[in-house]
Image 1 (cartoon, rainbow, N blue to C red):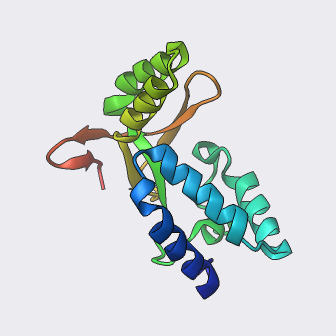
Image 2 (cartoon, rainbow, N blue to C red):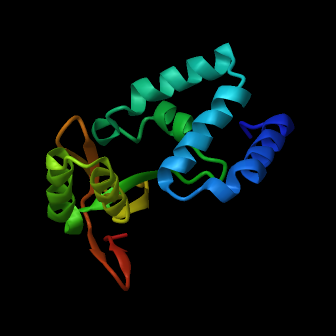
Length: 160
């Protein structure tokens, strides 16, 4: 696990002290940043591993996921790799909201649109039969799209 007992204790203490003040997603971001500023102890090994992973997966939609090195770098504790992505079913809706973010003047409106976009995100297992593509948004935002439709009752409709 990446967190030692001291870090876990620090996070519990922070939540106990600040939990009643959490009223928005920005509060979670603020607390997360505060936690890492105070508690994270990086190492050369961790920094090198992050840099290696980031270099390889930065444009994961183009990566050859059959490569053993890629799979080893991304393997989770459960052994199942997944990518947070969006179904092609929701692509136009997401891109419309993305454009609205760029034109919104109010920060709260921008944050609300970003939250709405995230409600369409799904964790999709990385297996050979599922294909991903990349769609640029505006203002350097990017979206990973799974080439499968989404049904609200059945979930992601794949050929698997």
